[in-house]
Length: 283
Ligand code: NCD
Ligand code: ZN
Image (cartoon, rainbow, N blue to C red; front, top):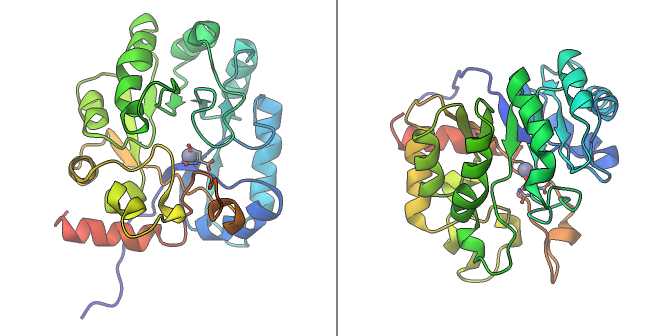
């Protein structure tokens, strides 16, 4: 029986390493990756090129000796982001992408965007310079059911933004629905990340037989048919779908709480789970 497996060194296109003692604790679990897109939703968020450069340095300091991880930094888009700072940070090689959080959509997103018209200038500058926009694709309208928030985002927010900003490169991050898979497949200038956990859990795993807070993340896992659509996309070989683990550590006390926060910490188990998924799919 085979006891070892040789794979291409993986890149992770959506990773939370946090800061301070949490960064020191979790960084070793991602040290053997190739490259990783670093999420900027620190408290306070990484908004300027200078902040991204400083955060990159803290990440490098937290990595163990011999680590291969190359952190690719992102800026947290706010309604007051200066297009000139984004362009300068990108031209200087400090950032790889800009992250759009609709305000209130997920953990540490309070400084995100409420009025998408107010970031029009930044998005146009990004389209001109070829800077990708990484998107947390959920509407925050309280009238929209949490299980529908991704699908509604595609129609209500993403499609209008893309129509009025031709050439903008967009990554729809952590897609969780068949609608997300299909939207990406039908578009130009787009890709999508898929997390590890959305390939192996559906909403029953969170809610049946007791509530399991460590499976709760946003976008929340959907019904089984969506999980199967994600697995087909992830193992199809179509290069528009790529891994973004969204490994998102939180202290146990914040997860195991009357109001537990969103985020699944998967970095330690990701590669073994993915190996199993690909083996199961014969891919
Ligand atoms: C992430 C976090 O904890 O920062 N949580 C999550 O549920 N995925 C934020 C995010 O990527 O949405
Ligand atoms: Zn995330």
